Length: 330
Ligand code: AMP
Ligand code: MG
Image (cartoon, rainbow, N blue to C red; front, side, top):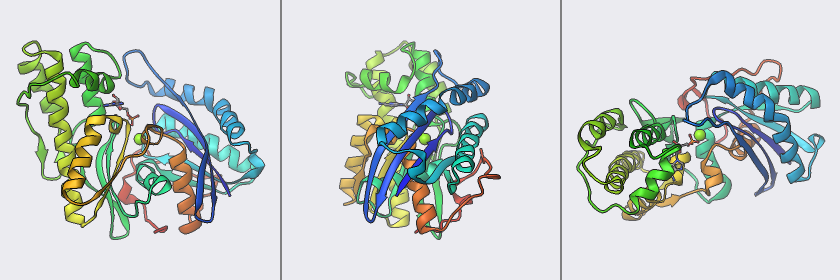
């Protein structure tokens, strides 16, 4: 069966077509169009305008790449939570219209859960802990007691926003994460920075203030970027490891744009090797926001969990937490 996925929780509008037959699954198309601004940051109204402008073209491209038509689609899955209200509305209204027009079942998907479920689409992972590191989100999520629970998270800003804000202060451009990574590769000296793990949670804004007041201008950009990466990624890997130990799980999966970082990937892999666990790192196009993970999660929810939403009323939930969702498909 063919599943159409629609993603629109933040900057990315995506459409994907997934084919599932027995145990075989194939991503036939995974198209995206990203809203960008020069300095970074998202203007909600403009974001919705972007999604409305590109949605038809992105869908057409996905269907053409997959060599299917709307008639072939058996299910529509759309990310309806959590995210920016304006973006979510654009995506959900588009998906609802398609479902009503073509008389297809529809299911609303939690975006964070989709980042976790994508591991089972492309790897043999069965029950992983997700280290989700994106611009706005930083969470450690795992299945326990009938729900996907958040075991640790940022207490202030997301890791990506931290890296981007710091890169702006350093004057090296936007988005900052990849540029910091390039500088860090040439760094050698580890500058001591605040290490801000609080219980199972992390915090970044204090590190940002420290960098501004005590570090900027006193060391090379290479050494600063190197030290920033070593410190904040160690914090993330530490809370992920503690969640794995606590839940007695031996699989880790990475998700989110920051997880494209090779140093973070290496640190996660070292941690997993040390505890005889397996580390799954999806390719970049599935780490970033994408509609293929929405299609896959929608298929799981619908066929394994019996979830079906009403296309006339399916709502958006900008603040939905993963543990608000009752998991019926495992
Ligand atoms: P997302 O919100 O998941 O789309 O991720 C966007 C964030 O990922 C931005 O803050 C980027 O700076 C960050 N990012 C992308 N590539 C890298 C990288 N190689 N290293 C660190 N951060 C990255
Ligand atoms: Mg995301």
